[in-house]
Amino acid sequence: MRVTGQGKRTEGICRGLALGFIVAVAMFAWPIMGPIMGSASEAAAQQPAAAHPTTVVSNIRVGAHPGETRVVIDLNTEITYDAFVLPQPYRVVLDLPEVGWRLPAKPLPSGVGQLDKLRYGLFSPGVTRVVLDMKGPVRIKKTFLLKPKNGHAYRLVMDLQGVSPAVFRTVLSEQRKARRAKGTPRPVAAPAATGASAEVAASGGTVPRTTEKISGAGLIAGPVPVPKSTQKPRTPRKMVIAIDAGHGGVDPGTIGADGQFEKNITLKMARELRDVLRKTGRYKVVLTRNKDIFLRLRQRVAVARAAGADLFISIHADSTRNRKVRGLSVYTLSERASDKEAASLAEKENKADLIAGIDLTGESPDVTNILIDLAQRESMNQSAQFATQLVKELRKSTKLLRKTHRFAGFAVLKAPDMPSVLIELGFLSNPQDEKALQSRRYRAMLAHAILRGIDTHFKGVEEARRN
Ligand SMILES: [Zn+2]
Image (cartoon, rainbow, N blue to C red; front, side, top):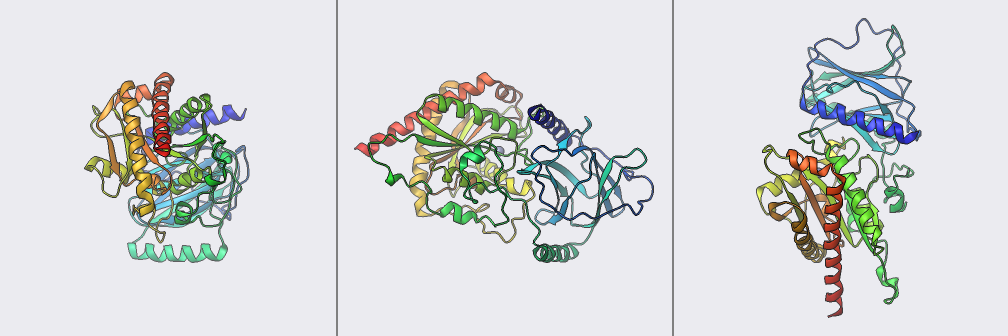
């Protein structure tokens, strides 16, 4: 039952978002006709707990008025919510308990009033997030819930008012003060930070939420949780491979020529690779995510490190304006990008946290900046060697991009003690690549090539150790 529901929901998300990104729909009328009566009620933010969402969103409408933009969300039940603004870039975030989606088969609103575009998806276990990219600074004038009336379902209404940057700064600082005073629980999925096992995250299970701020720097630079030295040298230890399906939940990643979402392709590929690796009996595999959910870049690294991963493989798919460009490429970390394309790709992939509506102002810059320390040099060398093996094997199976192994400052490759590579499976902007990546057989072929690359890598590591 649950599976069916999720399947439908995913389909709805794909259709809605894909079209929403491609076509701009202009709506000129206020979505709600008639005066708003006293039935409006403010609801405090509340942590939702439902594992099976009972609330279903049936429509998102946006209307423009001079200086103001109204967002209306149609729902079948009452709902709690938490709305706030974010700077750099200007965004409005609306957090809801986990909801189901049954949107009409038409494009999502975009380019309406102050709204540029919007997206939605699972942000953390039990929390659905809607992120509105705004054209400029706005303040949330009011948010309220309307009870069913005149044939309408429940409606969650948010009025956004365009303001000057100076006013926005004041709004932001007042918002921060108010949220701090209220102790507003910010939904955070932190499998590794809470000490929960990586397996929990990997199985998609619900991890107890915490309001504790995740210190990315601490997680990334801290000690390896699985001390390898405690194991007897004779005991054959299964190598642990962390597979990271890029993007997820509220962050769809890139969108293909045919409307395919990068986040769905990466998850399918991650599962395929997991199955192929497990079948050998030689590897233990951990997935950073095993469902359509958002994970911060630092959380991905934290999950892998908590599992004591010996290799970290982040899986992505690219897109570019030139639809003829196709082929797979492999990336490793470096301070200086190998070329302009690699640099802009890293910049794009590093934006995941912003896409998902996270406030990065005042945070340590480890997510957005890449400063490489000495401890990283060794794993960078190993990463590069592994990438070479991968390219060698993948070349036998598929078309590769020219200059297949490139370097750039990918935040997700920053673990100092874990050789890490990022594979761009191909270009979703290229119809051929997009079609191939939807084929299970093609993904299985890639997975086997990656397996051979991993085998060769560890053989090399083993030989180096013996000599
Ligand atoms: Zn990506």
